[in-house]
Length: 396
Ligand SMILES: [Zn+2]
Ligand SMILES: [Zn+2]
Image (cartoon, rainbow, N blue to C red; front, side):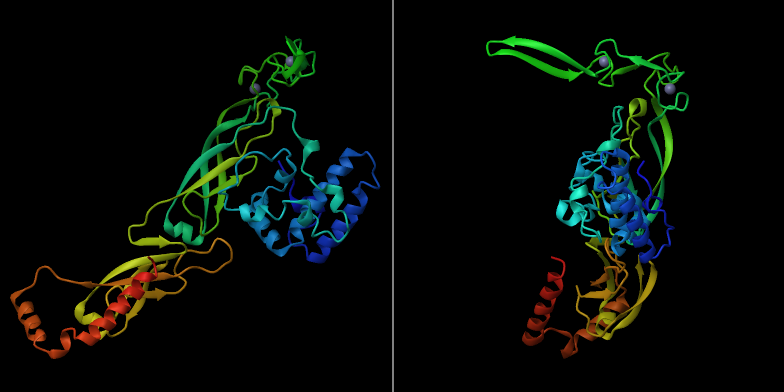
């Protein structure tokens, strides 16, 4: 697993910007490649320190990191093609916008108060790449209600996946002993020469006996049959930010299937599925609620209670409200994915036309019809049309 950024810099989670800067300067100088020529460990440390500083020195990135961990600030390592790269396609990853801060050498060193850009251009975590076979990515669906999406939610998921075998600690061997592969003599590669009319070609392929590992385990673990992994169930906590949409996914680095015999774990992709709401329809970060109002109330105005994602709210229907008017209840929509504000709720006002009327009701309506102000004239009809079209345009 990736090291905690605060741990890397040796500061507390509440450290001030100054403290972070100080810690970074000290460590960056200590591990700078110029001072540690040909020292792989120092180089790795130096990269880690720089990566940690890039995130923690930036308020926005630090906030994301505090909230979502490494996933929140994107896979910086992906830009270097390292251990964590190459997993998921981030096309639809909701954090993709945060990844681009690491893409390209130009922006990568931007936060450094030194001029060390060249030292970690194309950085990544090459040096720490695991020798085992990497575990596969895992994809799960997470159904969320609109209420959960509106405010963000923390979910605890039970997941069946390949876990490191507890009997052999993932080594695949009871005693942990291994021996050189006889097929490839420990190189992990096999060469096959083939003669063609153009001459002799040598194909190099991963050794089929050891899977390219170069070593074969002795006394196989009986619990995992030497694989080092077995099916298990784990619980994973996922923090879903507000404003996610159907098909978005969160990438939890290193939470996928464990790799055979010590290989790095794959990623866990949590794909968001929005459960349709029975009262509200979603339009981006706004929600729409349809409300039927009686003709007299539309004309005279009234106060009603309407449901929102936060419970019932009082709403004033102003006098002379036209059907299909959109009334806005500010701040009762979906929380924006970026930023802390929320969208709005719109109440689409419709006229309620009763189907069953008593004799008395009918007489009252007939009485009302006699009034000259109740029927459209050429003038106010035209007026109303324009109004309807405007109201429709909002969400068409
Ligand atoms: Zn081999
Ligand atoms: Zn085992």
